[in-house]
Length: 338
Image (cartoon, rainbow, N blue to C red):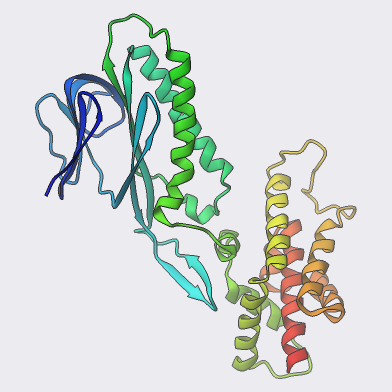
């Protein structure tokens, strides 16, 4: 069964079970990084398939996509090919995207421009496309674990009607339309795939997990026996605590701040030695402990902040205190209830 769509007067899209075809009655100039192309080609067909098939007067790319969507504007169409496989686990209602070897989240794009453009103009748009894509995904500040398999098999190709060496008088307008359309297509990427990220994704991207927090919490357990029952209660409470929107806000605030501090993006800030005059980290830690279990938890926070058991001793200046607050609040909560 084949689906056919006309996007411009002489350019059609064909889709069947095996491949996606962009076909033009007239020649197209294409600049891109497809598998089977010279980099700059004059062709009549672009093929996206799983078998590396190549036809005469065509270029192709081997890409197994599981969804495609289009972004249309007056003079161009962006065909977005999404290739995703993500495995998630659920802990007490909180989802976590697993960073597995076969995880993938790739966006390939073919942009068809309904104007005649020179090789130089196509190259300028290609550079803009690459730069804006990188800029967008950096702006999203995705968890670092996601970055490990994001766009590892991407591609970009830009096609226009074949031109002589005469510059297009409307190129500046086309360029603006191109930038705006690309931005919209990136923002639709996660929506189309129904992919989102949660607090566990950001915590695990720091290099530890909930069990590490449980271990740290149990190290300062006093007055009661260390049992599996208490460990399970603490783990469940930690997960419950980070379901609270206020706790989430405080944790993310600290993570974002620490990214800037450790990345030395602010001229006025140097936290190499965890300076004594930096106390905002403790303010956030105290706020988290108090939010979970009230005043008693703030006193418990002091113990975890000073002793830094387990994973807390390996964290940076902001995150060691917020997770000390999370552990202290959760420990206080389970014993209040007990």
